[in-house]
Image (cartoon, rainbow, N blue to C red):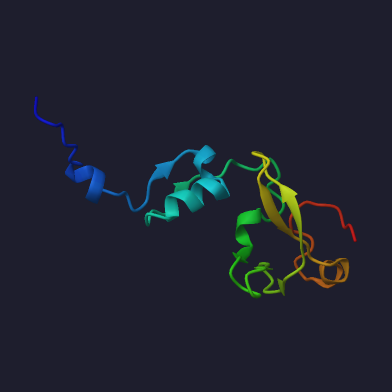
Length: 121
């Protein structure tokens, strides 16, 4: 009996999607990172917010490679910070949560429409 040789078909080797359109479950940071390795950019809708009076988190620019790999966040007012704390996402994976200092938030011209969180420390 001849040996069976597996030969990958064309799609297994060359048909990588560039922008897979996914539901929100594939929009997690881990899923996006895993899909980005082969060169795909996930297009996943975020679930709608019940709070329409404040900015969504996705209007903040995150650069996780900045600050010697520690990352930074820039708000819609153009203020960039490097303060963060570690937290867990819905899948209990560690994530960085960037924290704008109270003095920065109190002085900001956009504080009335900023993310709907209390003014903590």
